[in-house]
Image (tube, rainbow, N blue to C red):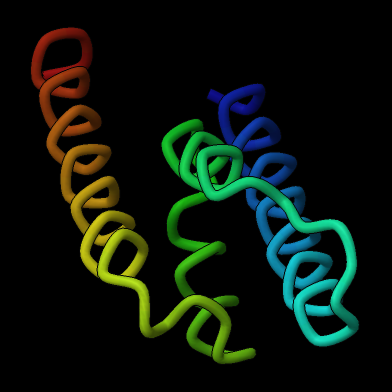
Length: 90
């Protein structure tokens, strides 16, 4: 369980970093992080951190792909966690 929490902390930190990096690059007109990369990092466990960061820095908040997609990913992750918990720990 400790390794899982370390993993979630690491992927969440990475999600925050690439979201902020993409925002900075968007403001400066430079190379951007692909949307698919942002969504993959979200799906790999950085969804809550990414969503909170996007809302905080107002990045991609007009894109339904992110404002609907990431909350959907969070719901699916919670459902998967509950399922795993019931199967293996209950």
